[in-house]
Length: 424
Image (cartoon, rainbow, N blue to C red; front, side, top):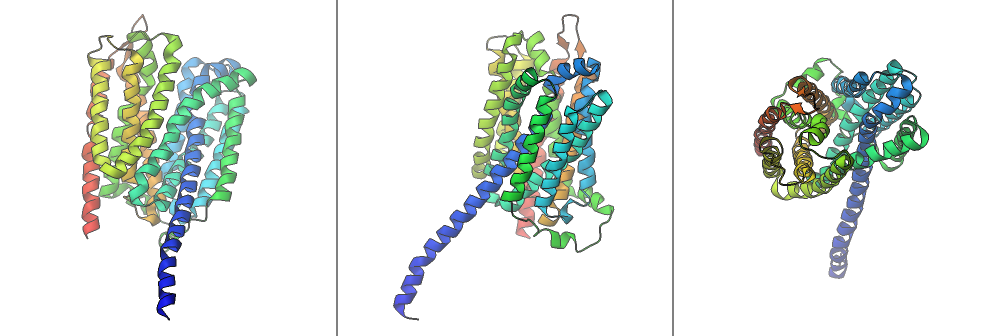
C-alpha cells in the first residue's frame, strides 16, 4: 500500500469513527425516550386512579372506605409479579417481554373502564399490576443493557423524570377526562396509550438477546429466585429500595391532609402544591442525572438526604408559618426524586446482563412492598382529631428520617463492593 493510500485511510478513519459514534448516540437517545414513554404511561395508569375515587365510588356504589383497597390491589399485584418474574425473566428477549407487559397493562386498564362493581374493578387493577410491575423491571433492564455506565445517570434522570411528568399531567388530565366523558373515559384513554407504546416498542427497539445465552445455559430452577434474593450485594440494593420507598410513603399519603388541616393550606391551592412539586421533581431529575455522572451517586444522595432533613425540620418539627406551605414542600419532592435517580443509577450496575431483568423484577417487588408498608404504617401511627388535624405527624417524620438516613450507608456499601469487584 502506498504512503498516499495510508494517508487517505488515516484521514477517513476519524470521520468513520465519528459517524459510528453519532449513530450509536442517536440509537441510545431513541431507546431512552421510548423507555421514558413506557414509564410515563405505567405511572400515569397508577396515579390517575385514586383522584377519581369519589367519582367511580358513587357511580358503582362503592363505600368510600374501600378506595384504599383499589390502590393496594395494584401495588400488591405488582409485588407478587415482581417476585414471580425474578425466576425466569432473563430467559426471554427484552423487547418481547416489554411488549407483552404493556399489552397486559392495556388489558387491565381498559377492563377497569368496563367495571360494574367493586369486585370487577379490583380484578381489573390486579391485572394491571401483574403486568405493570414487570414493565418497570424490564424497562430499567433495557436502560442498563444499552447505556454505558458513564452516561447511565443522565439516562436514569430522563427516564425517571417521566414519573414526575406523569404525576403533573396525570391527575389534572384524569379529572378533566372524567368530567368531560365520565369516570370510565380515563381508563380507556390510558389503555389506548399503552397500545401505542406497545407498537412503538415493536418498531423502535431492536431485539435484545445477548443476555439469554448464559441464562439459558442451565435449566429453570426455583432456587434461581433464592439466588436473586440471597446475594449480599443484592440485599444491599433491596435495603436501599426499602429506605427510599418507605421513608417517602410514610409521609406522602398524608401530605395533602397535613398541609390543609395542620398547616392551613387553602383547598384551592392544593393543586398548585402538586403541580409545582411535580415540575420541580421533573427538573431536578434531569439535573440529578448529570450530577450523578459527574460527582457520583453517593455525593448526590448525601445532598438529597440533607435536603430531606431540612424539609422535615421546617415543615414538621419547627413549623412557624414564616414561609408558605408550597415553598416548604416543593423541596420535599426534589429530595425524593433526587434520591431515586442516584440510587437507581448505582443499582443498574450491580447485576450481570444474564440476571439483570430478574434482579430488577425483584427490586420492583421490594419497592412496591416497602411503599405499601409505609402507607399502612402511617395510617396506624396517626390519629385524626375532631377538627381533622393529624396527630403524630412530627413523630412520623422522625421515623421517616431515621429510615432515610440509612440510604447513604447502604449505597456506600454497594459502591465499595462494586469498586472491589472492578479490581479483581
